[in-house]
Image (cartoon, rainbow, N blue to C red; front, top):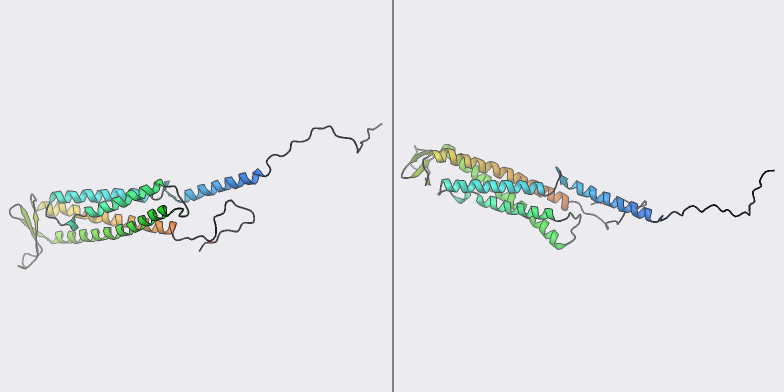
Length: 243
């Protein structure tokens, strides 16, 4: 005789465990999505594994120090060189800008200008890079002009000084006096090499400053967001507009 099921019978089986923290799942998902988005933003602002402006600042510092060292070597080789021919001023200015760029690296990346202090630092860094670009181009132009003159010089020693003339056949031709030099080979070889190095370093540094200005403008100021930053992604959320 089969066992009949009684609809009114009370089941004694243990109740299945209630699903705990159901409302917490969306929160955990939103949190993980937010962390992934933050990591993606942080990764987007890296170049060769280095966060901007580390790469640019290191190049600026290295080239600025090189320009300053070569300028002081030139001044030591010949004391009568003009200030425009020994552009230590360009190297010192750009080295200061590079130190500011390294200081900006220590600040956490913020997609928006949270404080007026951060905005002022970023704007100052951008303006100083623009000024450094102009200074480096000017120093490279001075070095190129001096290099072109040295290639046309005809030099002779006289009383611990080297007299260099552009055209010996012209009595009114310009004569440049280089004092405190051992011989004229110092001008036509050593100083000429230093001037060529100054021209190369300043051109490279101008390109680095131009890259810093471009990346700084594109990354910080070219894109403006409309509306508030969302706290977490939702299913019905529309993508944020960009202007």
